[in-house]
Structures are given as C-alpha cells and as structure tokens.
Length: 383
Image 1 (cartoon, rainbow, N blue to C red):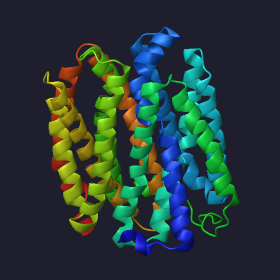
Image 2 (cartoon, rainbow, N blue to C red; image 1 turned 60 degrees about the vertical axis):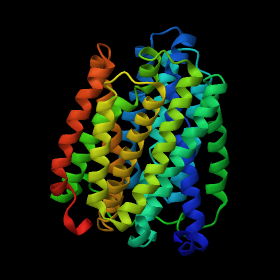
Image 3 (cartoon, helix red, strand yellow; image 1 turned 180 degrees about the vertical axis):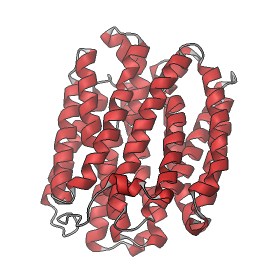
C-alpha cells in the first residue's frame, strides 16, 4: 500500500497539506450551486451574481504566482499560516455581505490568499516523495478538494448560503494553529533556488504543457461553472435538486482523481491525459440533448470523472520536471488554470445567455481537438 511508505514527519506534513486543500475547496462547488439563491437574496440577476466565479478564479490565478518566490524568503510554515489567516478573514467577510460589491471584494481576497495551498502542496510532494508514488499522492491530495466540495454542497442544500463561507472561516483558524504549532523541518524550510517564470516558460517542453493546460481549463470552466444556473434555467431544478446533482459530479471528480492517479503510475502520463480528453469532450457534447434526470446525472458525473483523470495525468507531468524548475512550475500550474478558467467563464457568458446547450456542444467539439496535440505535449519519456 502507498501509505505504508509514508512515515513520520513526511506523513504529518502531507496530511496537513491535504487538510489545507480541503479548507480552500469547501465552497468551490457550493458557490456555483448557490448563485440562483444569492441572486434572489441580494436582488441581482443570476448572470450578475455569477461574477463571483471569475472574481475568485482570476485573482487566484494571479495570486498563485506570488507563492513560489515567497518560499525563497519565508518558510513554508510562515506562508501557510498567513494564507490560512487571510483566507479565513476573507470567508468571514463574504459570510456577512449584504451587498454584491462586498461579496465580490471578499471573493477576490479569497482567491489571492487561497492560491498558496495547491502550489506549495505540489512543491512538497515533488521535493520529498519518490517519483513512483507521486501520481497517487497527487490523486489523494486533490481528492480532498472533492470531499470538501461534497461537504460544502450538503451544507449549501440545507442551510442559507452564508454558511458555506462560515465553515471554512472557522476551519482556517483551526488549521492556522496546526501549521503554527507542529514542529517540522520540512515546514520550517525554504526553497533555496531562484524563481524565474520567464526562464521556465522558455523551456519548450514546459511551455507546451501550459499551453495545453490553458486551453483545457478555458473550455472546461466555460461549462462546469455554469451548472447551477444551467440546471435552474433549463431543467427548472430547485436549490436542493441543484446541490444533489452537483454532489454527483463531485463524487465523480473524486473517483476520477483516484483513478487517474492509478492510471498515471501504471499506464503512463500520456495515456491518462488522452483518456481524460476523449471522455470529457464526449460528455460535454452530450449536454446539448434534453435528457431524463437520471441520464443527465450520469453525463455530469462522467464529465467530472474524465476531467479529473486527465487533470491527474497532466498535474503529475508537472511534478516530473527538475527540482530547480518545480516551484515555478507548481505556481504557474495554478496561475494558468485559474486565469484561463476565469477567462473561459467570462467569454462563455455571452454565449450561454443565448443558449446553454448549443454553447456546450461547441465546447465539446473544441475539446476533442486537444487530443491531437498530446503527442507534442506529453513526451514519451513521461509515459
């Protein structure tokens, strides 16, 4: 078993990073489901309230670029403590907001502060764990995001929307104490190398990976982040039904992440990414059809499974790059994913206002084209 190879300090640090992933992911899915409810409460249209999604994604992407350079000057512990403190405060601001502008400001702060957990988690996995088990460690690490999302959706289904911010606000405070008091040479360390994003992107192999990540994230978030409004407008679902449906997608995402971890280690990076792209493109295109509820649930779940299978494969490729490049690569990964996701969501707004289903069909067709780029993106030595 993989966890028999994790002992002592490394295992505790890994668990703490997984908990960090859990905290910052608690309301990621729930906020998409809550858009119709927030729009009614604050008396704005759902398309106006939907701005809370890019107002988180794009600051998150920009914020992710800050953390790898900071590890040269401050320990992982100090940075993670600051991240948890500011993220908890930002969540609290959102929980008490009675005006959309205050909520948007809180979401910006959440994005910038929360952006530090994933890059530092990938950095620590890459620096302190064997290559042969990284795929599964990345899978378990990201699976905590899906467990958290399920918890957030359950809370969102049966409580008022401010609660999906109050819970991570409190949890951030608890994790702040845990990071602060656990004595660890790993958390107390700093990264000794230089961080030069332009130099890293000058590497053709790395640049191709990030071009692919930009494209796939742009397309996926132009679909996924609209689920709440899509299910409300097209299928007439109420609050509980929307949350239940999105819970299915989160479960699928968790299963896909774990499956992707296994496939990445056993079948290879390229095979895993290719399988993810094919399944994702077919699933998104199927949203064009009007379907019975149980078929719709299967399709949405399949989309999440294949998205996270491919996500694990390409994320593990990033951990394979050299020790010198890994910190910059880890931060660029989050930056590119979230900036492109925010842009994809913003661009898709103009199209979904006219037709959700036709937009999703076009996105599915564009996604399959990425399959033909993967031989150049994921070289054979990563397979």
